[in-house]
Length: 90
Image (cartoon, rainbow, N blue to C red; front, top):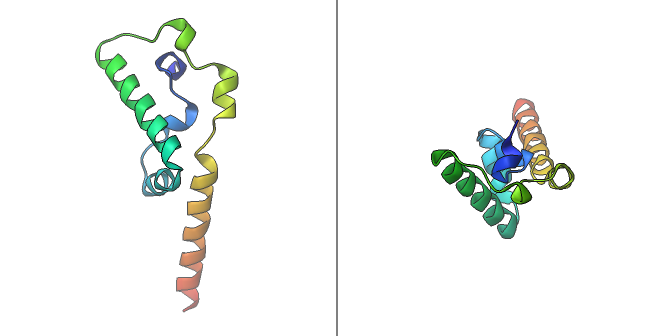
């Protein structure tokens, strides 16, 4: 998809649904900060119609090892299912 040329990880690309917003809120602060930095840098690069130097592109292996958000999204979705089920029962 080319996001690696902007220094982004796969998990930086999630659409900001309420579940994703809550998952991001639950991330440790240093991961949140790194995510914001990558997204802002990618936005600036996009505006200037440029890419990172090739040596700074996200490597495939690094991207696979930095799937940092999915477990939090799953946690949020499971909690929502539990709340909905609890609400139906009462």
